Structure formats: structure tokens, C-alpha cells
Amino acid sequence: GENVEQHPSTLSVQEGDSAVIKCTYSDSASNYFPWYKQELGKGPQLIIDIRSNVGEKKDQRIAVTLNKTAKHFSLHITETQPEDSAVYFCAASNMVQGAQKLVFGQGTRLTINP
Amino acid sequence: KAGVTQTPRYLIKTRGQQVTLSCSPISGHRSVSWYQQTPGQGLQFLFEYFSETQRNKGNFPGRFSGRQFSNSRSEMNVSTLELGDSALYLCASTSQLTADNEQYFGPGTRLTVT
Image (cartoon, one colour):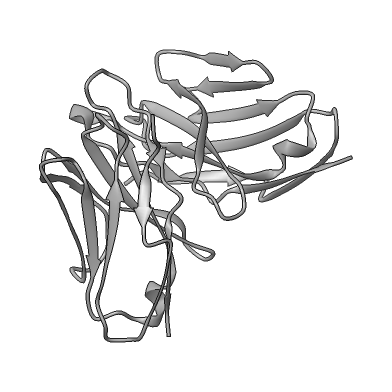
């Protein structure tokens, strides 16, 4: 089955700098790659996603890139702010016939230092 | 539009008991997925329901079961609770009316087994 590896497990950056989190996946049939942000005491919040027919997607300060050949995808956060501090999860899925089954990475605890 | 709601938010049970957790998806969403989140294993897929049918299942023992009602609300049940079942149980809903795959999570139910 699918396996998703996420690095780093912790990341500390200065406010205003950029943060990059990387994930690799094992199943070449995976075609949907969302990123979630989880704050303390809350459920994961979808922040951006990308499908296998797209190489890059951007939404304001957040961008995701996908390299299908290498089977890895990355989250880029620019101009980081204190409210970006949270745990971030990548996930992968093969959305065959609409069935929903996300396989998650282990998470990255991002700390933004003021 | 209201988000995904889960009840109860917190639960304390004793080993050997059973528990039922409830999830109400976003209005109009027809797919409900359940995940278990623990510090050691991370986020793991339990099962997914669509149109009252289990469409996908993760690698959990038969003590974990679920169902979906005609209004798309879902419940999951864990029988003969073990200490290791202590976790945050999250449900997520997906529209399924379009090609969108986005899963939106609720706040979770924190289950503690003593």
C-alpha cells in the first residue's frame, strides 16, 4: 500500500523567512496530494492541494510543487507569520472511483520565531 | 455553511467497554471518512462511508465498525475497548457531487481509555 514520508519532523524559522516541508510517496498510482494544518485542540484544516496533472499550485503565501517522476511533493510558505505556527501534514491518495482514503505523513511541527 | 461536527468532544471509558462516536458532515456532503490520530502512529484511515455503504476500509481490527444514515450522518463504534484505543478520532466529509476530493475535518472526539 501507499507510504508517505515527511521531513523534517520539526522546523523553526524566523518570522518573515520561508519554510519548506517535503514529502515522498511510494505508490505511483496516487493522484491527489493535500496539505493540512493542525492547530492545538483542532482538527486538520485543508490549506492547499494538488492533483497529479499539475506541477505547481499557489495560493497567496502558500505553494505546493509536485514531481511525479521522483514521487515527491513540497509545501512552501513564504513571509512566515506567527500564526503559521502549527503542525503540518502532507497526504497522498489514489482517488479511484471517488473513494476517499488519505495516507498521511508523520507531520512537521513548524515554529515561527518573532 | 456549518462545518463538520463531532460529538461528544471528550470521552473517558474503561477497558472492555464500548463507545459510539457521532459525526455530522457538512450539509450536502455525502462521503464521511474516519481517522484515528495518536502520537505514535499519526493519522490513520479507519473507513469511509458513501450512500450508507462502506466503500473503503483501513487496517483496523473488527472491533472498529461504523455506519452511515440516509442523512449522511455517520457513527463509529469501538467494542471491547483497549488502552491503545486512546486517541483523537476525526471524521472528514467530502462532497462527491463533483470531481472535488477535498476532505474537511471536524474537531475530533478525544477518547481516553483507562
